[in-house]
Length: 66
Image (cartoon, rainbow, N blue to C red; front, side):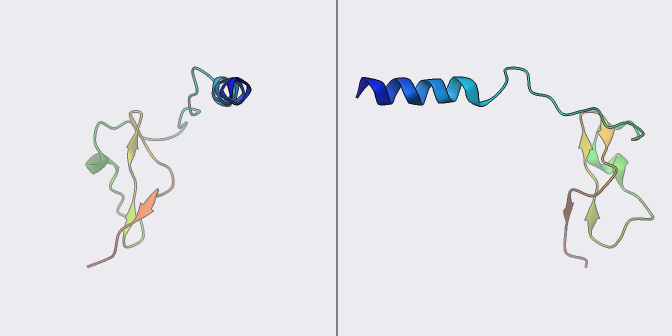
């Protein structure tokens, strides 16, 4: 039982780095909200989000068109 517990805890400790971070979005427009990332050239339903103060370069999700 103790061996199983130690294996589980060691797996959790090695699973993820402490300070994982995504690379910065270079070339993206600065933003504070998703509304600032609306693009007129985007396809119907494409949603560009504001991530870490920058607009996504490619849409992260698609909403149904009206």
